[in-house]
Image 1 (cartoon, rainbow, N blue to C red):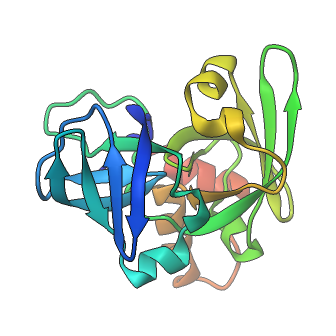
Image 2 (image 1 turned 180 degrees about the horizontal axis):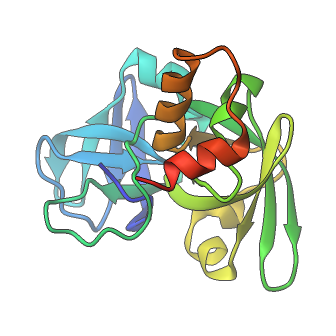
Length: 204
């Protein structure tokens, strides 16, 4: 489990076949789970300045794999007793979104992201979402996109500072919204409203 708070912006040394090798300050151990751009991956080997993880063909198919070069977000899995700060993140990427626009408001940035329509049911106004491993709050939800507001600190300290229109990102929707939508869909034919999903999610 993760929190969606990026612990380090690390560097990709190589990505050959299924092996991704990372240069990082974080001292990993064999078998550790580490979220890289939001995807939970397992450490399979160590080096003096980092570690390597393996990406299955399924992972490579589901992720915005073109971003696994240059700099990447990393977050080690939580340990028992760690302070919980972001939101519950599994490291299971649901889909890929595309940045439609970034607007500089002076003291914040509005980021508009489009994603496949079937995943919009899991995007809840004022709910949580993970973008390339970063825990963020959804402000507005539209038919096939949503809006985030990012403070200057987050923009400066994450890879969001490099993102442009058309950039693809890994998206993990809110776990509770997914669970609630799945349960309700098997109990009744009517769709959940945003208020119903938000109310149920808030109880957990």
